[in-house]
Image (cartoon, rainbow, N blue to C red; front, top):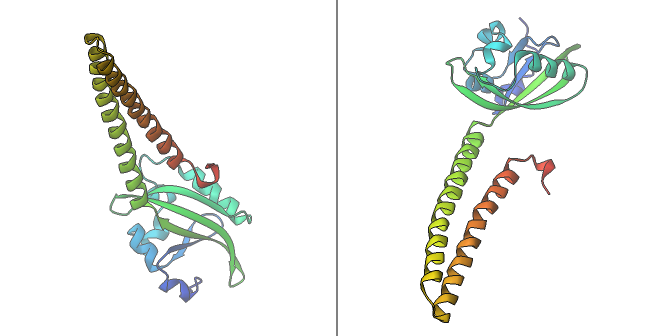
Length: 194
């Protein structure tokens, strides 16, 4: 089969797949073979279903819809949890665009590996949850002791100090809510941020 993908794509670090307009992979560059774990021949024989991770939020029909829209000239960008040839799941961002090469129409897919980024995001979410949980627990203890101290003493100075402890504990407790707000902000798309 004659090569259609320009040789310049061979040197790219970005993974590139050339799809026919019906979604069949026609060619790819070495970076794609490395990312997906499939040789070009294996990729041509694999179905899109083979590339979708078992618990992915996107299915084969949706990927075909994206390819079809790109074939009609509407550039598409989406996240896809793929499954490599060895079964390992990887997160990628795919950008599909219509292209003409050698008087034929194709859909060019550019794949960017997001796996490390997604793993970092999951670790940060876990950190935020643990931080909020620990802050709430510790502040509950401080508030409880401050309440007991406040009731046990009658001196104005000790009572004022206990009130400061209680107020500080409430402020630190509010910090856990701020961390939750930050977590929600990080999860939003850049276009939704204010």
